[in-house]
Length: 339
Image 1 (tube, rainbow, N blue to C red):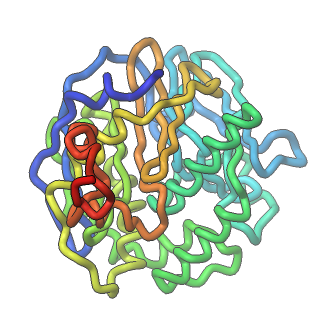
Image 2 (cartoon, helix red, strand yellow):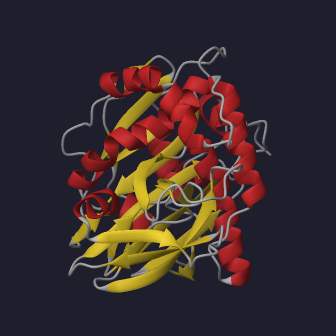
């Protein structure tokens, strides 16, 4: 049984930092090797990476990525690509080989446009964590069933519409990017208040008391380079829930989630580029990791429950429990009475 325990067992949580209803907890831990790659946003900016529609007619769930350089290029799950016939997001983390042409799996986040505004895509922001969680579950199921990293496109559009409504943004083409542009001042308030923690490799995210995401990278400089756009994605969800009554965040959450995620069996799936895509889904958590040459390049964990009830119960009651706690309580009933 393959798990992510090797990559998570030495990860520790730092002190949480908060702004309004968004809490970020830095994650530190031992590195398992290092890979040489360039981030997609940097590669696009320097002309080393071109991403375009798949042929003149285009294909909604696929794009063509051309790596012109001698170094691998990293595209991240949920990363937004803006332009061409419609804006898209990456369905999974992809490590493009050097000097390669690769068809990459994507989802549309601009329902009402199908016409060129540019020949090539530019780098955009990142998806809200709730959208990424739902997409991660659907892509994982598609990989296991069909070997394809396909999303539920209707569900993605539904999440984009909910986020636009949640932050009070209007968009004639139902574009996720319009939520960012119209609420940029509020989003930048979150970003200014939550700078990248030095030397950390990852982050645990909570909105109110509710676990929203974990993103863990192979090295600190990757996290800090993508930090502003990652935080903007987290803040999109937080802004949509800003006026809700929320319970306070509990510091128990990060280690519980990390330990639990490390015990869930993973299914190895073929990666679009370099490495292997490890997928997991349990009643409480869902996520994925890209592992290449023994290095966990990017690992994401999300709640597998829209209302996140199980996380709340674990913080304040018997669920979600670390494996050690579950072993100790294996003779107890769900109401915590001894059987």
